[in-house]
Length: 476
Picture (cartoon, rainbow, N blue to C red):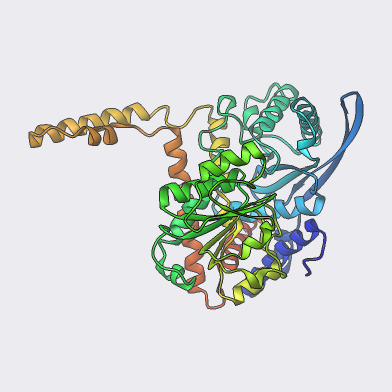
């Protein structure tokens, strides 16, 4: 493979190579037919449709790929980008299959893309385009609560998901589960609290769990906890922003660099993420941010000194061309496919620990799963048990006070009496998911004599789970 290929083709080939590496280590554990079934993209559709924009008809091209239906529905976001193509969509769909298996979310893998630069269109235009794209997918069987459930991705968000859900409702008025046709919706339209922050929060929980494994930390050439660790973040979008904010505000990490489209800013004493975020929104770039050094060649900062590098932008950012320059001891892949296969090989040989995208950024699909279940149950989490838990907590405190003859401090009362709300439950479920998944990955790397990196361990785990699903339905 070469990094000089078109981006989508290179990304797809990277995913295939990483899966092949895991399959090779598994030897005869899987027969050739099962291997091929796991790797093959089940189906992909290309749609082309006209939309009248400002009195002029424009034709748009979109794709929806379904990599696997070993579990239903198939799950995966829809991205709007001027660079999206079928290869990229198929690669992302495959990655979703493995991602869901790694974190035990019972979905198959899917992905969608629309070839468009969303910044060139206003809200009214984007609504027309999105609703028409949704109709094309719905009518062709590539969007429904039972078989294929999209979510936000690059270039899309809550707004677009709300338009898609409303379009589905009007086309399928008898489906009482219509809200479950898409996740990542606004909370008042069936979304779930905590979904916006989910991927970034998942990155935080994954890194916290990594630092609970001293042997893994030592192998990466680090020690201690997240506190004081120097972090560079590429991309201060939704994922990068939340990950950087949580890691700095709650774990004491120091964000020493932020890379954006117009360049990068650095400060060895740390950057205030909220202030950078506001500056970025106001000025559409990081240039000029006070109290930091600006670097017009943002990509060069990927190789700046740091403990942890978090690429949270696009795929293919670390390639065979710049992998030898990376100084980070840990690369946490918050984006999909930021490290090419060629770069992955170089970094592994150099002893750099890579926490793979197929695990690290699974927070989004995990909380999407929670939202999908919430929509099918037609009830928000915590509605039945919250006040009961508060009553039991109050009774416990009264009993403690009666037995000890002492007044319970107010801070303790508030902490114990308070019942868990939906956000508490979502964060608890996400934390548990990321912890257990990392423990499985780390254990396999430690116990398998031929597995020396987290990515290969993660893919082996995913493949075994998917293969088991095929065997359960008698395909072997």
